[in-house]
Length: 295
Image (tube, rainbow, N blue to C red):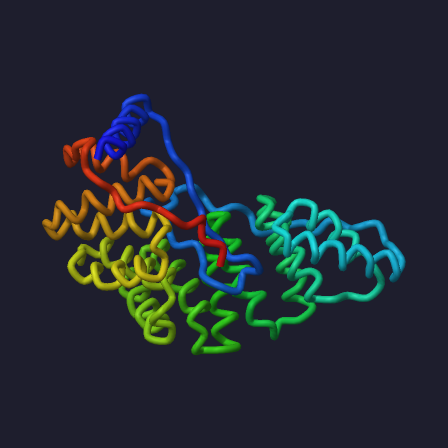
């Protein structure tokens, strides 16, 4: 208990000084769960989608093949920046391979170059408009760029290919939610959860939407399911804490806020909520024994 006291005394010292903790999760090839919508709806105007595609210096087939193998190995090792460098060389080779543009787009996205990532995924979609995952991940990238309308368009393209894709429905639901079309989002995300009941990202987004719609009691089961699937993801624990707080379950809310702090507490929201609720520094928090999710 003494160690817990010291730990949370430190937490509240950070809060008093305005320090923020950050955390994130993601999937390696963009085939798993997606980042859920933020608790704060984006208000910045969406970026331009008129994206120029840089024209690479052409290389011969052998050079392109070697660069591709090296780029894939770097991607699988998690070195997305260097993977992007090698994959740019690969796509400069003869012929037009939509998968090379696709994986380059993911590498660029994960290395932080969202504009170039979108351009590469758009190029991949032009070369092969029948690839479902290209449209789904294009929707994800557009969400990250704040382009909700573009994300909606990409997710609908995916659904035109597969109306029962839970990932595509998830991205569409996120876009509808951020565009203020709550009831449409609820229908879409409910369908996604029916198709993928074990997907913690879908459950989290559905729960977040229900909170925004003023239905925290309905949000609790979805967010509890998200917690089971993603026990060490800070924003999931924070969202569940919000639902508990708004339904009067304050002791449970405090524990979940503490778990969110323990998991990273991106944006410092959980620490602020703990201070607002008057949580003491002797409250024991669940221990985070796992590394960040990397689906």
